[in-house]
Image (cartoon, rainbow, N blue to C red; front, top):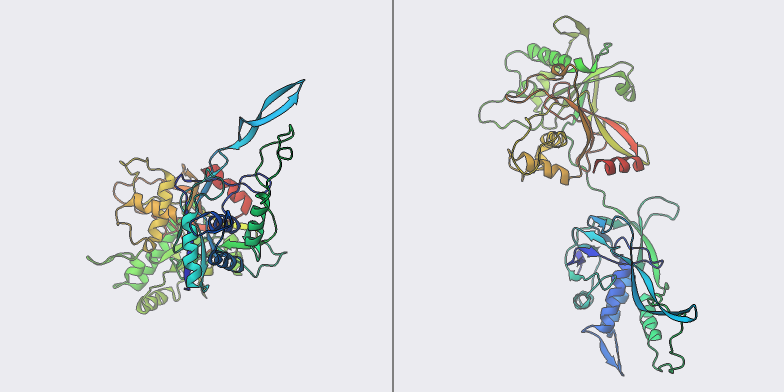
Length: 516
């Protein structure tokens, strides 16, 4: 058996409880704990064989356990986990500990950690992808899994099943000790099964102790058996690298200008450039530019977008002046490109109601998917909306949840990447917001723009009030980290540009924590 072999652990109570060697809570069941549970099942479960007056693992079980020692999981699935208790809880109870104090025997109360498990929202899993699993081993492991009643403490019941596992973290065998990255995880190494069996036998000697040797002393305290550390190794597992989805725009054409345009005027000048392009093309301008489609034709998710880039943004491109960026989606017809290129040829400037600015068409065509600089190590790429985002819809009414600016921002992200959520109905805005959230997208601390509101808008849909706002966006795994994109109702005409705002990883995590 090869390909996709895995073991899933489902916790009926929704909680996993385990402890490390030092007594601290175990954040998740590692492969070493899975192996130990299977060893216990082999020695006490339905496959165990009788030897004298004691049960022991069968030869088939030991062979399967040794196979696990030689073949650590290639992947681990960890669901979302959160501690059951916000802070440590200690319970005091009588456990038969008696001390001689103050010339009398005292029944002492001992302390135990209480409610220190972690709540899980799904199954934990271990996968062996691309590993040849002998049929006999697979069959034996299935039998052993059925005999495992708990994983970790006895208060942590579990159901182990053989099945396919989609890992969230994969084994990284090439990481050196001095290299960063990955989670250090205990796994069973060669000889671990024999070590555990021997430890069990040592705790249950064939010759019983005498009454004198087994008598209670005042120094006795309840304590679990010492777990041997031999036969353990430590491997590193790193998060699965999710292949980034296609960027909404694929190419960027640059038109340089000496003019510094204030944020509140950028929609106006993008509209002026847009009108100039349509006028130069004349009759038959393609929908790519006009945004108008014939009846019965479903408009594409994105079309030509015009964004102003100030000098601080173009400096990374080797330019000294600001520029307009003409963003093109990837499915542009060759004929449309020819018409757009003709309109840009010899375009010297554009005019608003009371002013004209000069333009210098650039021969540079940039890849929109790698437009921005790479993220520095130790940082997380966030995005700041610039100059502002305009909602596409009015505040939604009805439903169980009030509609917020966070919802509006997530909906705007969903509209740009609409093709990635084909299962969401066209008018199911709440469903689209939930789908965007499931892709790891977050909108943090949105705030309304309260001055010169109308200057951030162009043509608002009927019934939608101009309500520009700014926010910080985390796109999760939805887009490449260097892709150029814009969101909101004016994303095609100077609004909602996503400008990278990199933060140290720990600072970003604190920001997420504050936003919860």
